[in-house]
Length: 361
Image (cartoon, rainbow, N blue to C red; front, side):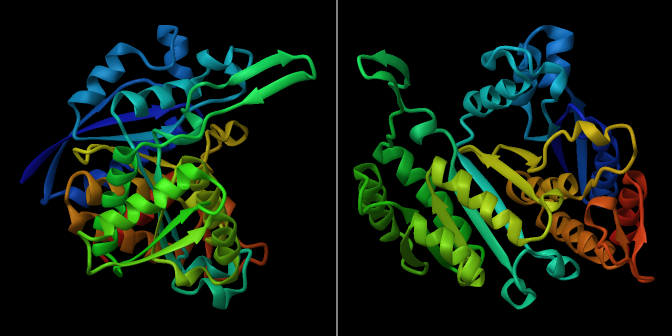
């Protein structure tokens, strides 16, 4: 069996509450197939409390030595009074930058049992399975100069939207590689009709396409992409775009699935080392009640097995188990208003138990 060094960052709020149950699930899923060497470290608010900073050196050192990292969540009102650079969320940005996690993978999958919870008509989201690939370390969020200044006419805010050819080419190659593993269709999203930086984006993506003749490439302006996601989402397979557009479109796609509490994500570097985390936040309002939904973190673990650890069989088993339990069990966040005899309301630990039981089903 292959041994994998996994770093667990429980973080804050329900992240720390859910993580022990997720670890139980991962150990059960990998039993007899892979050996997991699991260690734990602090990030976010808990790290501020213990070390005085959101990303301690000890945590970053452990992250660099790991094969993959599974994160719970960071943040909470306890730390809202801190300056922006000192808040828990800064630790997440710092670890992404330090590990050069440039490729953010955000799947939008509508499980059959949850299709009716989508904001769209059921027929529009049946078999929905989109993967959005977002460039994570460049673009307008990181461009310099930036700031707010005082001018004669009053205050002036400015940001710089920039990408270089290398940044575009490497995220394009990641997206093409992923499209090859799926239905071989890639849609590149830009605003090339008005923004020079995305004119370059389109040119470079088109050039990279020459190395992937087996993948169908299309281009779409971001405003049209947003419209098409809510008009006919199943036309998409893999979408690739820059940091800001990806931030927006991945959240739009998330709402098509019916619940933010079900969505995993991955952030990968060139070595396929990844940081995997649920899309939902720390949810301080439900901490300690044993009602948090662990499925997004479990599915993040499945992405970890698939994309960083190359344990595809384990990833498939986890995803099938989640689909299976959703036909029978629900945590409060995904329980429909009109409860039926077919669905049982369960707690955090009971949902994890159900996934473990379904692994051998």
